Image (cartoon, rainbow, N blue to C red; front, side):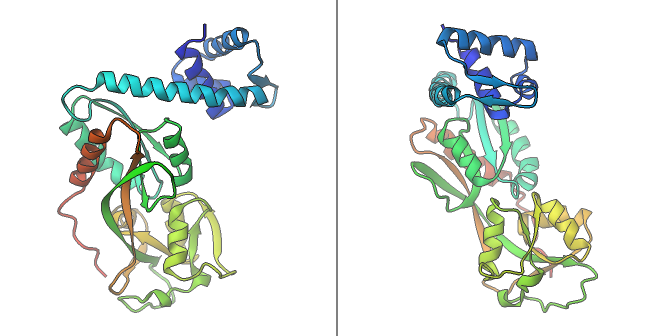
Amino acid sequence: MITIRQMRYFEALAATLHFGRAAEMVHVSQPALSAQIMEMEKHLGVVLVERTRGATLLTAKGEEILAHVRSVLAGIDRLEGAARRRSGMLEGMIRIGIIPTVAPYLVPQMVPYLRREHPLIEIELKEAVTDRLLADLAEGRLDAVIAALPVEAENVATRSLFTDRFFVAMADNESDVLVSPLAETQVDPNRLLLLEEGHCLRDQALAVCKAANKRNLVNVGATSMTTLLQMVSHDMGMTLIPEMAVDTETARTAIRIVPFADPAPSREIGLVWRRSSPRRQDMEALAAGIVASRRPDTEPVAA
């Protein structure tokens, strides 16, 4: 018979398409993982994986079986979660996805706080762009997602966590002098640096600066806020920076922060979970914990 272990190994291989990395993901040796997947193939009577010298690919039948495997594993995770939960909130494993423009600035406060306030919690984190996290949420690989609201997904519940204002980041030696506070129309689209496609902050920056139809945008393909701000510090352009990133990034990068005039543009950060999840009370407790973990003494960013 097919075992839960075999299904988890197969799911890991499907996610990585690499036997070595899949083995690391599930904490077993590569031969052990390979043997279990071969046993699964033997039992099903089909070839799930195409093995070549240069790549590992799922066969058409493997793709079909994967959808069933993920559905079964999601059900098992819900069963185990229900069995673990007692009278207290946030006990056992909770898998949280976080977008890259939030994770580095929220996790250092969030995780210690949750572990201190909920000693029986086990936290697993994944950082990825919103669309990928929502897909993992829908397929049961995540319990909750922290992302910018609103999200375009069906059958999800959301809870607003906090509002995150935007500022303009520019080089200390920037030749252009921007008047503070700044009107949105003063940001030159031709000098605007953006994260690569797929990051919601890219779309938010375009919306704030009314630059969606401009053709001269400086598309640097940066995958992180830190990389983007390094480019800003070398006078390659300017970008939008969320308030929660200001303290961390200005401490390590020579940039100047310019505020917008009121009402300042902002993004709403929220918690997202499946509407069908039996862990609604956990999600509410998680949302409350995230809000409480943010430093209450954070001062407004100076002009």
